[in-house]
Length: 452
Ligand code: UTP
Ligand code: MN
Ligand code: MN
Image (cartoon, rainbow, N blue to C red; front, side):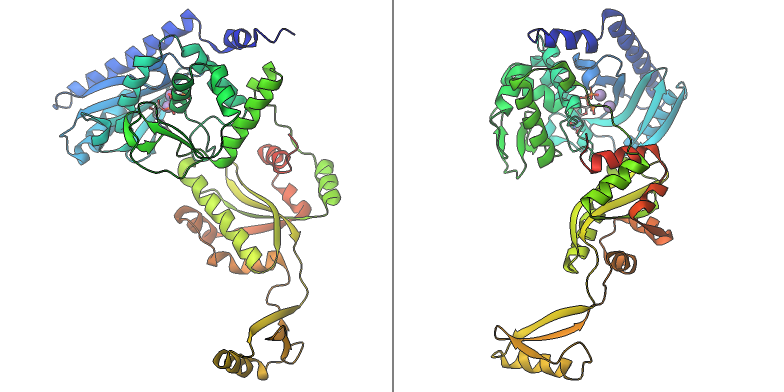
């Protein structure tokens, strides 16, 4: 295989041809005119539709028809008007779509499907500079201007980088992925000059690496990668990037620099763990699996996943405070159910719990401890070890699943996850996990054991 022309081969697969590009522009134009027509009917002036995002910058990947269309309002529009009128316009536009739904970020917006185009209709304020934004989405038009100014001739490099990031599983700044956004990929290419130069730079990145293209940053960030937003000196474009996605990209870049291969641009197909595969793996590993399962809250992923991650951390803390040890853990969400899955190294503990008290010479504490345990019918009398009082008492939870079942309500539960758990939950143990007879869950398990 000739590895010199890998980028050309990839581009041959992911770069939209003239017909696809033309169709994208036509659909965008049509929807923008629908926005403008609906805006004219509101009685308010100076509201207009604008195309932003990768479709406006020639940095979109073939067959990914994501149109980001903003409904831009004058800056002095009251916030409630922008919300109400913006939503009203978006709904009128969406009336022409195949289907649509309202979604909630900082402000409500509408996601609509026109043929094979996924369209976001997002109301925003037209402010003078990104430093004066009134909501987070108001930055986007400034991103657009900055990128359009410098991207000419580099579009293919961006396509390669985005596709490479997809292959590495690190593309997407949604809170579930915690990866690189499209805008971040564009800025990396602008800064380093090309796809290959981004990879070469990443080879020696360390957490904390900072890029400030126009050298105007005015704030400290404690993130693995800091890309100061050229349109806003206080913001890190890479704020959503997690340490592991950062490291995953560095690792993958090195792999490509060592031996370039087409496969690195495409995620490997996820395989489903079979019943027997599961039994083999768990018995060989000798660990114990348990899953807290509850109904999936009806909220968008950017709301759901942070709550699931928080629950996962909180459960891990609960277990380790009680001397159970967690080897691996992750969260999963299917269509209707959600789970926190844990693999335990220690899941059963003996009834006896060695309870250590204060040093003998701390007189007040020592007396209190003795008073408390003098009548206690445990496994031992009070004794002294390493200068401290100790007593062997009854352990409250000898079984990790019992602990979880009884103490789940003391965990930090986000609002929606909390409501759902209150309605009911179950704890599956060992091969009971296979009761979640969902193909997505079987794929999740393959990933859980790092088998692909
Ligand atoms: P998109 O998520 O649609 O990204 O956000 P994109 O740049 O168009 O890339 P792809 O090709 O669809 O994946 C649209 C715009 O919203 C802003 C950016 O300006 C982006 O171009 N945005 C989005 C951010 O600034 N940060 C984000 O995390 C997401
Ligand atoms: Mn987009
Ligand atoms: Mn989008």
